[in-house]
Image 1 (tube, rainbow, N blue to C red):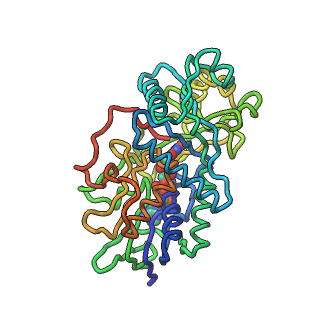
Image 2 (cartoon, rainbow, N blue to C red):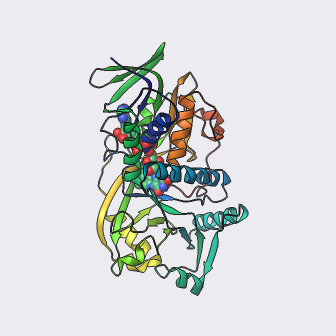
Image 3 (tube, helix red, strand yellow):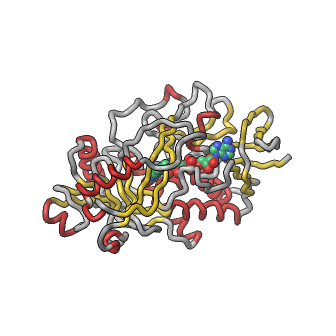
Length: 386
Ligand SMILES: Cc1cc2nc3c(=O)[nH]c(=O)nc-3n(C[C@H](O)[C@H](O)[C@H](O)COP(=O)(O)OP(=O)(O)OC[C@H]3O[C@@H](n4cnc5c(N)ncnc54)[C@H](O)[C@@H]3O)c2cc1C
């Protein structure tokens, strides 16, 4: 029987960041388990890139989390010598969708009120500054950027491995806690641990009881388009991350293609059986959005596609909490399509809970207990994913 001080189940970015954080904070015997192996093709963390932004509409809480998270991304880069976050800024283009326009304007106001240097461009000024785009108005968050997602996950897990974390490919089927915790795996093994951290993303449902905050797994489709003309205009030195009415896009970072995706797909799926190929209809919709806002991408060649799953809570707030019936079990899930940018902070917070330390950020918003959660929102305030 294997024994550990802390067992982390789920080797997406949150499990890897937690292993990285705990192994940097304390001398613990740590095991990190994943049913398909850390950073596998099915998890929600393993893609070329992800959006980083300060912009969160009028929600100062997430903006402040993003500020702290940026600091931790830079620390991780220093410690590992790897570039993980490429600064590009975020351009939020005005369109016809009221929610999106409200989100853009309120993000601009929040950043301005916090003295974070947001900018607004109109008409010819917008065309001069960002010739790749067409819109009447664009709000610019200078703190936006592109996270190299797979590379970040690999960096957290290899750093954790170098510090002695045991990383194993194992499928956890059940866990129970009486005196100490017992974690059962599909190959008939039982692992004993003092603490358990559960970060299984879209698969979390199978481990939840009725009283705990639930999630819905939804199928998301990503399309990478190669611009029909000069790709250099879409490199991070000149092209920001962008939001349009219903889509978002990332410049060509880590791949010779601009990522475009619909941010409003809500199709619920079972993570065990979800179809992992994109629909032609989504490719056409992404191209149509580009014809309107980013003309050089309108007929772009598709160079890569990917399907992955959001683990949505009802109000898009995360769950970062202990099990109410057993404080040795810690949960991190429900990252609702916008968690990646906070990975080093979430890893640190899950580590603090697992090590019985005072969390360094107010976690009341992220309670696992249903009655303590804020109600569902009217829509759009968090930017609906990404
Ligand atoms: C299409 C898409 C775009 C996104 N864009 C952005 C963005 O631009 N910016 C941003 O901030 N966030 C974004 N996100 C959100 C972010 O990527 C996720 O919140 C984050 O990757 C979730 O990581 P995780 O570790 O919780 O889950 P996952 O990465 O899904 O990892 C869970 C792991 O648990 C393992 N597992 C499951 N069950 C078991 C079991 N029983 N035993 C052992 N292992 C198990 C799985 O194999 C998997 O590897 C996006 C998400 C998606 C899907």
